[in-house]
Amino acid sequence: MMKSIGYYNGRIEPLEQLMIPALDRAVYFGDGCYEAVYLINGVLFGLEEHLDRFYNSCRLLKLPFHLDRQALKAELQKVIEAVEPDFAGMLYWQASRGTDYRNHAFPPPEVKPNLLMFARPAALDPIHPKPLKLISLEDTRFLHCNIKTINLLPSVMANQEAHARGCDEAVLHRGSRVTEGSHSNILILQNGTLRTPPADELILPGITRKHLLALAGEHGIPTSEQPFSMVELMNADEILVTSSGALCSPVCEVDGIPVGGKDPDTLAVLQKAYADKFLRETKQI
Ligand code: PDD
Image (cartoon, rainbow, N blue to C red):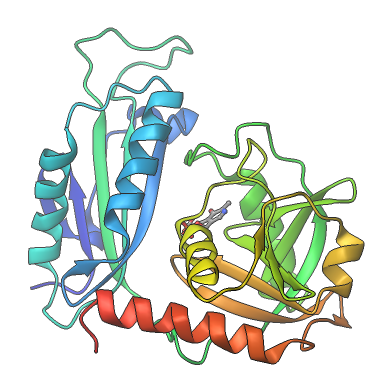
């Protein structure tokens, strides 16, 4: 049993020792896509939805991933079996377009994709998520944000900027239109409605976002997937940040200005519904 597990094309090692070839196209082109899923009690939370999104990313990138759903699940299971029984943390996997000399055009068909995975412990408190402080930044990413590609440099720059300014996350906007966080989705509560930008090419269709929209529906909270502005965000009754690594956290500040806190009851309904779903499906209750 190891604390952090690394996996590369079937080989399992302690993560810190894992080596991969320099000619993996992930290294010099970021030519691949990934998923990050929370693993606890041997359960990958929301796995089927993550698999759907992963195969969709492969399709959009024309990446001929060679393992079908069952075969990929079997590889994920090998990592689950290699971690300690009380492991709780993120399981990350990425597929790249194989190993070959650097060439912008795709490699020949005999070059198979590479599968890299790692599992690292990470705490997650679904019941008392910490209110987050955000900064706002112009979204300078490309127009394929719906693909979960490993090309994340603008997101890295934005998140670092947030940390440099003593905050947790950056909320990105194109002009006045809010898109998403650097590694999360953004939702707001406005007059009792849960609003989030539409799942177009400007955002990643987050699994946590999807779960939260469904739970809102089940609890009689109206939902809307129409664009909204930074002004609407700043004036929202509540702001929520969602991701697999942090689930669903409220926001208390954007650019140093206090925000949200005006609809704690609806927020509490959503948070409780989310925590219950998470704890139930991961066999914690
Ligand atoms: N990031 N938007 C972006 C740009 C993201 O990178 C993520 C997740 C999300 C939320 O998606 P989900 O609810 O499916 O996790 C939205 C992961 C956690 C990461 O890069 O580590």
